[in-house]
Length: 459
Ligand SMILES: *Cc1c(COP(=O)(O)O)cnc(C)c1O
Image (cartoon, rainbow, N blue to C red; front, side):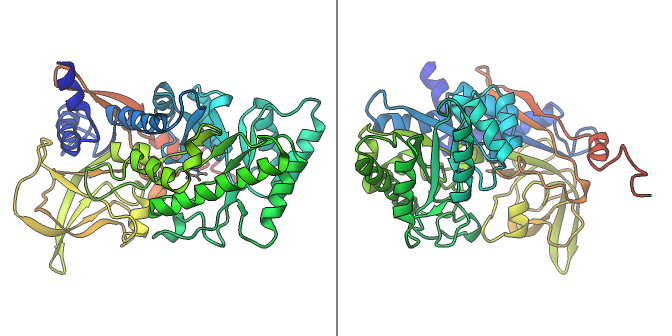
């Protein structure tokens, strides 16, 4: 029995994930979370909590298997990928911490009960007040640039005791771009970190550590979606080599922890979880074997790879029409949920799945259709000429792989509300249990956030 349950839950098994999704869609309709008529909401977002737990476990075990027992490792989830307090709590329960990059993200991590020792603050534009708060809390900080380091100098000098926060510097290894320029963090001119290959930079960095005994970490995040594993690994190899150089110059193991960032790419073309965390670890071992000898503690900052495959948008097809011979389905899922896909469709293609009004997979010969969102601009399309069974009003479309940076990164165009997010788990009886993680944004909240309490302010 236990073996069977494990098999049914195994999210890395693409068939298992697809079967669980079909059950969840049917249950969401049956339980009135979404529906083909106005008796239920037209739009809902779902998160597969079993899948999230399994991804967290896969990450943890991939590193644990490669490191000597007892090596300190913190897997800090990049909060920007899914800034929902219940998600952060779920991940914390699975042993993960948080990587935060704004006062808002820090507040979310704290609301989820993630403590300072399990929180890492990155961001290229931290204010003096943010830095001072982080040091007061004892949160790990990675300085982005020389001027930020000077601010930290002043804070450290003003304090009677050495900082409780582990502090590091973010390095841009300048190893090059991936296929998506906007997500390539390690180009020669990237805005992030201290550029390692610029003239004089390396010597400056070594000196910076020798002058500051409280600098004990080095950080890089050398890629995200579209950056191939060997290129990410090359950035981490550069980080390790710099740490060794600093420690040799210091004559002690001053740098004791390497924060290697996140960036494992996600496969948006099928249910397969590729590449796997094991492949990432294997690429790192190939590039920098000494990284795994236990002489450094490690911090990772994965975001997309932990959540993306576990999110699903479900929308009613409100209307269908044919324009210029192309069938168009008008849905409620558009730019507010899939901003990158709508504005950069070639870089961010999403799959679309068709279901009938009861939530059963829709059958029928494929017809090229446009899947349009609700926003009032012509480009609000999730897909063009997509081959799907011909959709009718009251059908549902599902958009998988949207658990990171999609519905959790809402875009407020047309004052469209943030939809409800429900987590789901498969029960041992074969049912689906939903739990509300974020209610739908109310119209009152939209008005309030739009200055609704001061209508006369500009008169
Ligand atoms: C966005 C970001 C991450 C997470 O990247 P993913 O591609 O979602 O894994 C990690 N670290 C930093 C500094 C980031 O900016």
